[in-house]
Every structure is written in structure tokens, then in C-alpha cells.
Image (tube, rainbow, N blue to C red):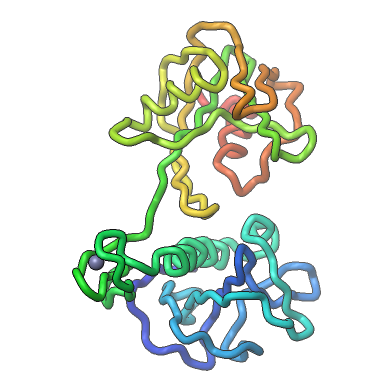
Length: 268
Ligand SMILES: [Zn+2]
């Protein structure tokens, strides 16, 4: 179980560490192929500015960043967060996901955007506070709409050029300034695929720490329009029938949960 906390006591020998080097997390490999966060016997120098994450299975958990990946002792490896989900306990992955966002924030938000003075961690929140003008900057969260568009037994799926061969996902995009997430879902379906949708209903949400999205999932019905793919964003978009689905996104993603619910005819 992972309980996020803003404030924690000082690290001790039993503490858990989520150490990020660039996009990778340094983990301890288990013989069965799974992995776990580092514990008090870090085998690395203790970082100067640990970021409190919370309590993971009764132990204090911290994140920290190091500039470059050090030589790693036997049994340790550096793994991308995307690859971690399949190898790490769910509660540890939740802590890693929070750690990734906070480590990104600490690493990339070092100076005040108002007065250019240095930022420092706030004592009682996730903010970073300007050492001169005292403005508080909070971790950026970027909402994205992701929408499963269906037409009877068919579902609209899209392919981005960066996807593994054969894999398709769902229409998705970032919410723009002063836009509702529902309007964003409708706009993305029109912009990416040239179609209009109706009967939009909320499915659920998921933090997506690559690096700081919040995915807001919707199901919608096809309303009209010819499929016209925006090739500046997508490689392809097409309809798939429930009994002939392509390769799907990994099970960690809300896209996969929505597609699985469609295939199981659980979307109502
Ligand atoms: Zn300032």
C-alpha cells in the first residue's frame, strides 16, 4: 500500500529510494525478473535533496535525481518508467509514478518564471517557492482527453508513428487553455480523424507520468463524417471490429482498459 505524504521524517536505514537518472529509475533486480526500489543500503551516495513521496508498505519513501547514471553495483539496473509497470508491485509503481513527476518538477523548475531567482522546496506542500518574490510554483499537471469512439461493434483506433509495429491506440490530445475536457475530446476526434461524435460519457482517469499528464477517458458514439486522417500527427486511423482487434497498448494504460471494456461489451 502506498500513502502519499508531503512531509516525512528524515530518511533512515529502512527507507526506500526512487532514484531517477534522466528518464530511468535505478532499481534492485529480483531473481524472478521483477524489481523493487532501492532501500537504505543504497549502494549510491545518499542524495542531498530527497523528495518526500510517502509511506510505502510501512516504510518511508523518497525520490531524488542524479545528473548521470553512475556505475551500478551487481543486482542494480536502470529501467524506464514505462517498462517498470510489468516488473514492479502496483503500490511501488504508484510511488515511482509520483516520484517521476516530482523529480521532473524539481529538475526542470529551478528558477522563478517571474523574477528568475532560485526556487526552493516548500515546507508543507509540493510547491517550489521563489527565494526572492516568494511566489509558489506547483507541479504542472497536463490534462488530456482520450476517447474511445465506437460505431456499433466497431471501434476507431489510431496509430502514431512512434508506436510499436502493428499497435493501435485511441484518439487523444491535450486540453487547451480555457477548454472543457469534453470539448477537447470532440475537437480531437474531428482534428485527428475528421469525424464528429455524440453521447460523450466519462469512463475514468489515470495519472500518466510521461512526464506529467492526467488522462481523462471518455466513450463516445460516432455521429458522422468521413474518416480523414491528420497525417501531421497520425500514421493511420481505421475502424476495427470487436472480433478482429490489432495489437493493443500495454495493460498499464487507460486506453487498454477502455478497449478491453469495449471488447468485453461492458461499456453499456
Ligand atoms: Zn520570483
